Length: 305
Length: 305
Image 1: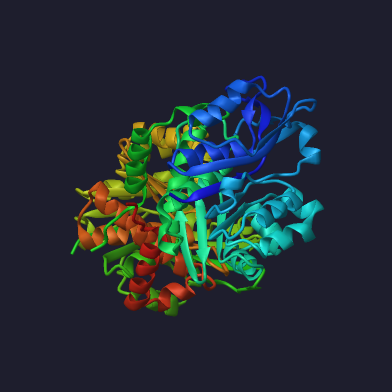
Image 2 (image 1 turned 60 degrees about the horizontal axis):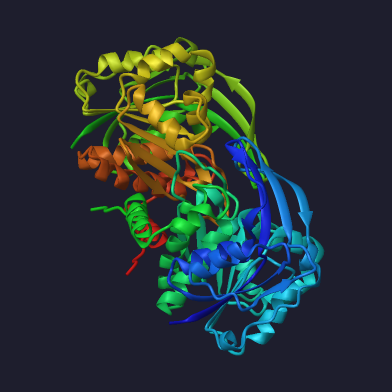
């Protein structure tokens, strides 16, 4: 089985949506990516940092899904990264209420020895300097996937562009693709981003699905249309985790197989938004996943005579 | 071959986009729907009205593509419906500069005798009272498709709801589906609209494609991602025309075949936006269509083991 190293935040989130609100619950890019990749039976390790306030029970949740947490540093006298946000009624926009970096401010990621020869490296949203440090620790990965956001384009662009030269796949949302490339058309934006380094560009469009670009090829996956989106937090990371996890499980990094990986990521993201935070991701079963894969086939497949 | 009656506007459009501007050119819902349906080899008749200022050469264009224009009334002392609009830089929004109803104000549609037994009736965007008059003239259609817009929801809702009870398929855009149903979620919106009458609801999402709803089933078709959208005018009508034309050509009104019809509509709409107005629709060949159908297969089809 292919090994996968996931670096990103492990956090407390406090979320408010039109359906209710939570106290501090398990969150962070690496948690969502990891739980999603674990649902693909990937051999995945999380590299991150938390404070002494992080409950053992949350670490136990990650481990119970099969995630290796050796690389999850615990700073006993520090506090865990905390994010709080409130969604608007349409669930498509949100206000960030609180961001406390805490232990993340001095995070020096350490990849566990047994994962230094991992085949896949998944760089979750973090400062590009931290992402680069992990790139330098994994000896000879076959595939590096980068997720990032507009925040780093605004305040650490040159470091981000350095990381981008090192990766095979980049996953960003539509607005971020436009910002990074300076192009409105997503087709032109993806071409420009490929010129920066990655052979594959994945553009996440939320409820409108995702696009995969490679050379002159384009693949389009829808999001599952839902009667109710309960909490969108982590959907993008869950998508990236399912994408990476499927590639780890299959060990096939061809364009054709990346199409399937995009669908797998979309399937897992469709579960994520059904409950608050990571709640649904912890309960999802192989049977759930297979049933929803069938839904995606029905949603997209057609015959023209 | 199935006959199809198309009622809607035949107009002059003056369009301004970031790429340039046109004088008065051939436009209107029935023109776009008709030219698109004609590309599916449908036996289609246009029912509409123009003024004495409408050039014979434009009628010749419609006829040269195989459209029957017996039902295109010419009011010699009247002026043709005129619309002028300007697109913003992102091409996703536009301002209407001029709307002159002219001969449309007193339009009494007359369906030619030889089309009174048409199998398909396509009601393009027009006052719902005019749409209902055409419903009453076609004796026993197997399928009625309705396109409408928010304008009629604002100022002729009860008449529109009357027409909606009579139709099998409704095609509207996402914002209109939300307005008509009072629901934000498109899944819930489509369910509510189906309760108003139609067995099939098609929601057009522009660059994000289209959704087809029937009972508990959902099908999602992407739009072709384009490097450049030259002029979006008429794309929604062209989509509806391809959808209706494919159904007319195949004579199969099942849910499965409607999926193919949605793809066909998306293929034709992808040509429409490549040039100003109807220009591209007049040149498109069977070979062009078949090549783009292959592109849509590559864009959407995947294999998961």
